Image (cartoon, rainbow, N blue to C red; front, side, top):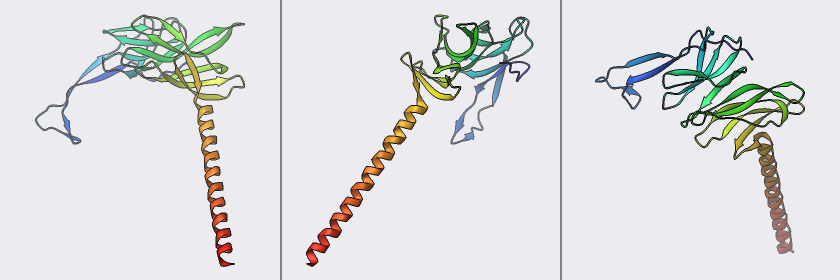
Length: 208
């Protein structure tokens, strides 16, 4: 899992910007401050993937260890979230980060696994999978719910929602909803056909 996008992670913070009805107010000056997020020791590049309203940035940097590691820029400091190959993909208002990190399963099998890191406690929670050796978190809301993708035992990727310590198969739930909707439409269609048949029989009876 090696991705190199930019030579240095940067974040743009609007300092004074007034917008009304999609137009820039002529009385306001459009100015920005450019902040370099830094690079992990021994690294040569870094980049940011997501930023919250507090200015915390989730991203990734290579390091002297020779791999790319998930990072969190907070309080003017860039820190590694995991010494293994990893990436920080999203961050919420509470400073919780989700992404992907390499772990080892039984038998020393390499697993790329979704996680949630809490900047408040420093704890990392690895999310379960649907039986495969891959999962990745793409987004996280302020309730700590994570959306992402996970592999099944037969290597099919399925969308998931992680909520309340449970991994929910969104694709399966969507399929069930579609099936229920089809069944509901079929019932309604059958009811309309029965209604029309009853009307025809009533007309025939009245003509006799």
